[in-house]
Every structure is written in C-alpha cells, then in structure tokens.
Length: 130
Image 1 (spheres, rainbow, N blue to C red):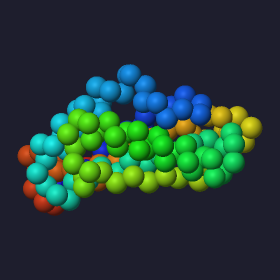
Image 2: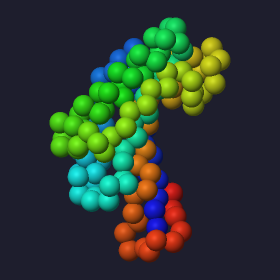
Image 3: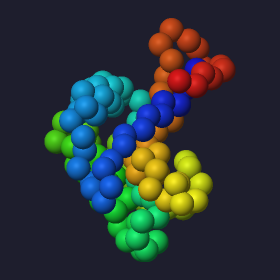
Image 4: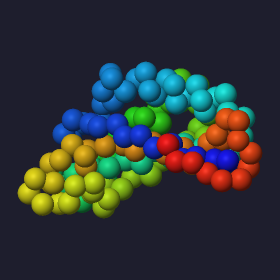
C-alpha cells in the first residue's frame, strides 16, 4: 500500500527564507527520504506565491522558495535525484485572488508532496492518504 504525504510551509511576503519552525519537519523529511530505499519515492517541492506583483515576479519568487527548500534538503543529505521542483507562481491559489486573497498567507507557500510512500505493515493493495 502507498500513501501521499503533503505538508505546507508558509513564507513571509516577498521572502524565500525558510522559517525556523519548519526546520525540524524538513530534517525528518530528509531522514525518511534517505532511509527509504524505494527509488519511486520522490519529493515534489511545489513553490507558490500570491499576486502582489506581476505574474512573472510571482513565478520567480515561487521558484526561489522551492529552491530554498531543495537546497536545505540537499544540505541534509537528500540526493538531488530524489527531489523535483515545480514553480507555480500565483497560478494555483489556495485562496482566490480577491483583494483579501491577493495577500493571503495560504498563497505564500511551498507544498511538499511525497507520493508513493510505502505504508508500514501493509501489502501492495490499497492506499491511504495522510
């Protein structure tokens, strides 16, 4: 059985700096990726930004956010081949781009997705979402 693990890291406006409260989670994520021998287990790092500037600037900021997470995971020993980075800019908002949504922290984020993580103690059939 496999599950998909998804978590969200939030960022300050205009910043790609990873906030300290996320470091323990990223250390644990790195540990899991290093200990999981299954090559199909990859980490997808999806960068997002809100629409406070141009769409082009939002793509750049979302890419820098995702790359910052990728760099920290690399420092923690995760091989580059296990991480894929996607930058979405403001194209996938969690909060619609209304006046309030344009600056929502839910749109200033990196989502970490680990598809295909084996569920301990279960066979190959079925799936679970975490």
